[in-house]
Image 1: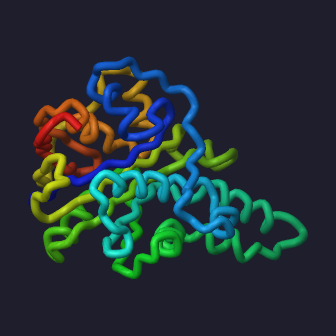
Image 2 (image 1 turned 120 degrees about the horizontal axis):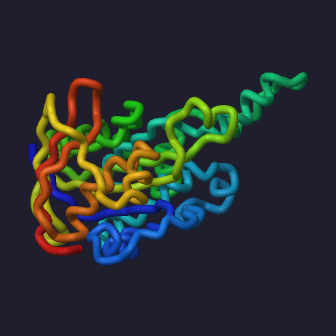
Length: 266
């Protein structure tokens, strides 16, 4: 199955945007992890921006960045949001409330705790009324989201925005949740090549093959420390402008094979 990529969004430690990250992912500049800038989600109205947490802001931040170069209008796009952990911060706050004497859970915290919270805030921010899918597949969430978005683009013959995002939870959840670094990325997929297309990819299923890794130990720690960051090797191929065959983690006995063909260094 083939899909075309019309835009990228990225926010991670040392990678403050897709534009700023390209030289690092292409291997032309050294990766310095540093601190991740706090996502702003400026597309949200001020009242909703105050209510939502950093996880939702991360999703909206990278989603908006992926649309900017192509000029795609968010209200007409189908969306796929994929997150492995959900909002650990909100879950921690709710658990603290339930463990105390006053067990009334804030309605705002409750609606921020559901897995499709980012999709709801995206609709508020952009006016989108198109179909939206929110999913989770543990450490294979990026691959599951990529496959879902590509299937939707091909089946409906329309553009689909994929947003993958995860943040480390606070203690004590941090001891049992395999997310140690923050990262969010987004891809704007199209069913056909257009003027904005940066390249194409073919997806297939693979029962064998090791996951594609980074030679740089710091980048590899980022890739393995966040489920969304499993997609960074794909972004690296487009940053370098080189065709690549990649294997992405998905299910215990199944991988997602991706043949990436950039049209030019982005």
